[in-house]
Image (tube, rainbow, N blue to C red; front, side, top):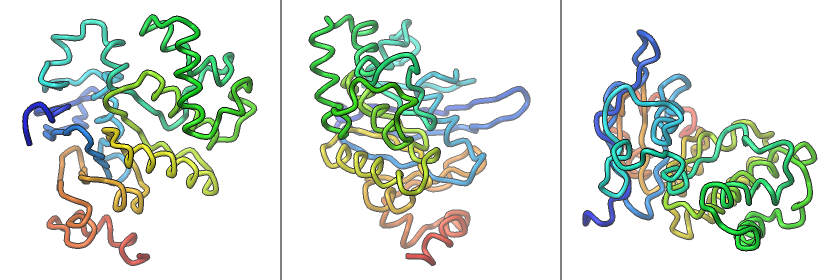
Length: 249
């Protein structure tokens, strides 16, 4: 694909915690409009990878390029980069002392330096999008897990990022709340938002991803389209990992 479609390039990314090597040389690229789902067993390095892409963890070595620019060289202030590469967390990470609306405005006013009325309009746009506009005055403790995660998605989208990272966005939810969050994620994917999603929701990966990456023991064991990964994976470890899912489908 043309170079101007390439939005992220991860090159030989490694991450150690003490003597433990968690990521062992990760290479992959993301083009504009891609929905990349990262799957794999617990402890394989999936969340560490996505946290490194957002520099919530500092890579031990390797490079991350955003639209052709080395992130560490270009973005001395990583807060600017994080407005372009947004993040949705497992545990929502909403500000407990702020209302839903304030949660979705604060990044705009503090990082993007937008005026309050402009920030409010943008926040409301995305709260409507995720079905949470009726809850603008609520505090996080008054919301269900699914509602909190939808607010967290709206907060990330209010910065109007070019890439959205989602780290196991449904893992902290009760089963009945998972569907409402996956529905929002499907809408974002269909709208053409570039997304990297760490997930254990295999049906979502199969239906919504343009590319699936299977990580095992800190390396990319397989990278392919959902059709290949779910119907004819090349790697025995991928087949083993997906065997339970495939038996049920």
